[in-house]
Image 1 (cartoon, helix red, strand yellow):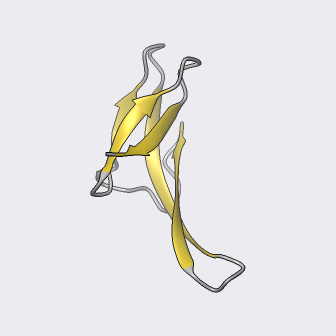
Image 2 (tube, helix red, strand yellow; image 1 turned 135 degrees about the horizontal axis):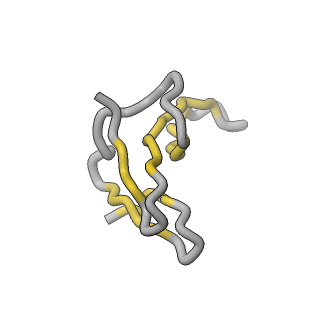
Image 3 (cartoon, one colour; image 1 turned 90 degrees about the horizontal axis):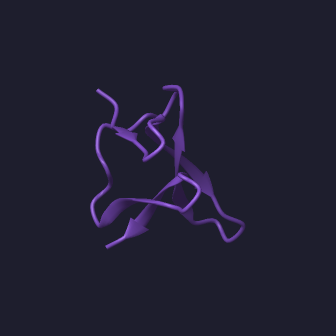
Length: 64
């Protein structure tokens, strides 16, 4: 089951992760929230991160 979080405005978002290769050849994971469940949905928040909300109601991941 995908990780879901509802912001202060009552909108539910689902956490996703996508691996990408940088210009230097390193592989990093891009984390993002979407309103619909798509390919790459994650079951839990990655270790060392926490969900935070901006003043506009957008959800972001912050390092602890």
